[in-house]
Image (cartoon, rainbow, N blue to C red; front, top):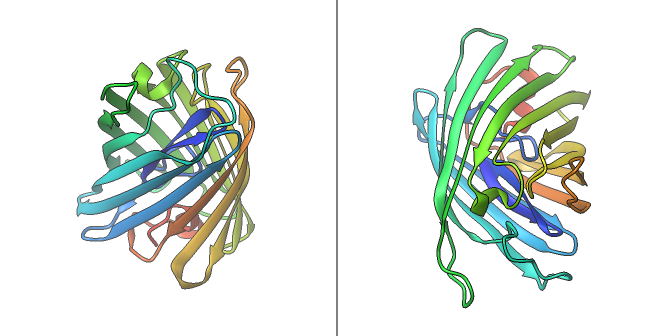
Length: 246
């Protein structure tokens, strides 16, 4: 489930079930709802909200309301910066070639919000990610690629790579998580942190954001709250923990 987020003067791509910014090839089970709220704190603060609905057959569709400002920016964005807020429709299809590998192909398509100085513009983003799950306490690992238009990614490359991992520190209770959107554009950041299981099917993720080399993006903090009460397709042991929608 990917929401788009802003930390300091950059946005982070986040969608369907995800680590911090790298989408996980997992979808909400049929007729179930996934919810996630992501906050980014720095010289720019933003709120990003994601809802997804499982349609069955390893497919989901949802809505992202992203980059809603929390407070005035310390440094106003420059023309061309990827700091637009807006609304996107997201969808993802998951393929299961075997018990160890999942493949997710997804997209976000929508428009930026109209402001007094900017007109509504098309925003588009797509990804393909492969996950290898060890099915035990050795974690899971993700790699993939993304493509986005300049309104989404900002200045820099429009095609980049994605890497991610999750490793249990206290199985089913606390997991280390890290991911990286490679490149030199304004979503090219890495986040390193952890996810903690909370009562009543909630999860809290906290991470420190660092810029991808050559991107000149700022440092920041990411806070993510996920509702995991719904079933998710498909479940594979501890790695369901941060997929959300358990």
